[in-house]
Image (cartoon, rainbow, N blue to C red; front, side, top):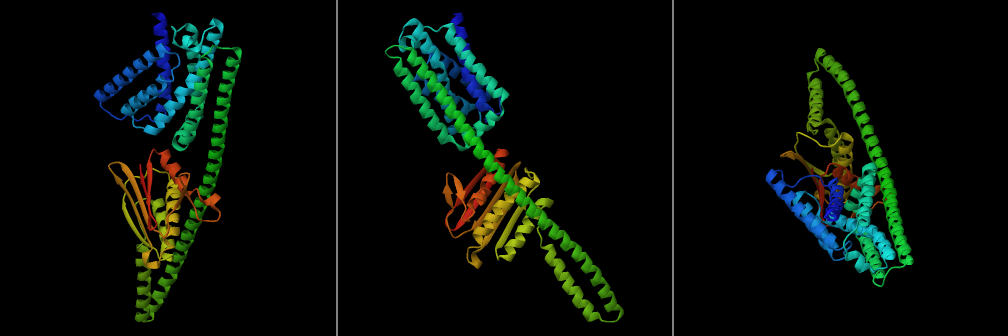
Length: 429
């Protein structure tokens, strides 16, 4: 009885550990009521008991692994808001990796007791197997607890490299199946060595893939940071230009006032009236600037509007805003990149068909941004990324990707709708 309780506890911890890791990525509960949370906890407990029962019958089971993966995935989906594909991929990867790590103790016991794998695998469990499982779980827990960048890397893998994880899962499944095959006729020391080599190769493969991904992400982030810095520098240059223009306008106003005074003193009322009309026309033009209530947002939109006016692009704006979730620099990157792309696409259309529409609003504590523009060609996608038509595509193909990263940072959603005549991007946070 003690053996069963210990093994049940260790295997429950194994299942909980996989759920705990994915919970760090998808922590938001699906239901807020206590009754639904209690129901979700009951479902999770029932699944855990079923998984423990399967594990008691077989230390490693190729048949039970898929069913356990599905049960764990469904139980988590019922309780938390998450991506079904991401949970399924993670549970598959985690279950197979744990099973691979369990295999050496089975082979070692088979060698010592001169038994085939099916006997060792299906016989009554022993404390050596329990201790080995517990050791694996402690190592995984310490790795996740001490290295928080592991969770960040896992987020990147699940959000952007699901196909890669599925490939690794397939390789691990083949390795596990081959190890099971080796034990049908009994074990040898070579089998033990081969499996250790398999595990080492799997770990090295994962390390290589993770380091490669980290290198690509760091390289990509550096380029995006350079792009952000360049955008901010451009915005600062424009701000300085506006500042100089305002100073010039103040200087002009002083001379206009002096001129009007001289005209009135000398009885030149018509000349004074003409100057006043010209001055008021300029003031009316200045009043046509866009005011949203957010100074930096005003600056970005007005600077882009000047560019659109210069390129004969019809611009429409709808704003109903009381809160912006982004920092100013992030907002500049989002609007700067999206509006630049919209302007670039729209200016290729005929003059009477050039149009850009921007809606920014808050609805029930949700931030919405919708940007629409006309275009003359279908955008090109490669590996889920939009490919730029510019010659220096290495530097310029990351505009939308930098926007995606910022939206993901705030747990938002970004979607695209397009054909060969229009392009629309929607952001919801």
